Length: 178
Image (cartoon, rainbow, N blue to C red):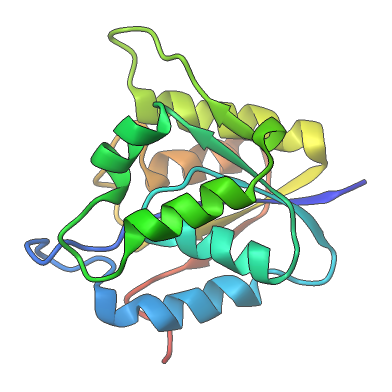
């Protein structure tokens, strides 16, 4: 059965984020730590495509020719506006576009979330639903260990994966060695 890596993680900090969670100065170290989770037995990746961890995961998968599924809670233009464009360093919009266009259309999913439903929680749930249909899921979480984002955040995804008994590999962006 396929080994599936489901990724969840923090976005890159804006320059106004306090306290820092994933500062842009940690990007290369985090990218290396994410790439290190992609062992030879990983056959499929599943995640969204926000700036920061998601895009770094998608880029690492492309580098290793690991096919990915991308799930967005909004059409790409709105997703870019809400979850990719930032005042943090890095050309995240262009990187999103490269990851999106490198993914075949049949593996790009855009949700239609009803009014009043948390779109990020719906996206997490869609990822959690898709992953086991593709194989044996393991979660890689770029997470500082704090429970601050609520429903639809990284902590929520980690908790739901653990409830399912799935293995979870944690990468703390503040502690990754350069």
